[in-house]
Length: 130
Image (spheres, rainbow, N blue to C red):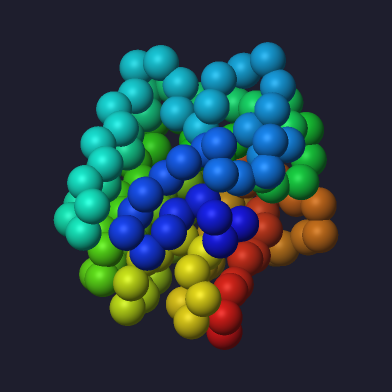
């Protein structure tokens, strides 16, 4: 999962395993969303609709990478803020999503389980390099 965001905030779905974003749905961000990628600066992702995949990066069926109407803000070398029902805030020396040496914390509603989804009903805790 470290391939999702590299240190320069370069997201390339083709570099990741094909099963991460397979399915009949679209990729990570669906229509009505805005994806702005800038190297070494701010990458802002907003979605007015639900991003769904049949095969998700998280275990479970038809899970959501980002819930409908939520905003994910990524900044290199600063703070990354994810909102998905509740708020998880974490900082890193380089990038913010699944990078070595930093901690990525995702919570959504209840205690972590091995096969929970990030869809507002389940929860899962991810840490990397901690």
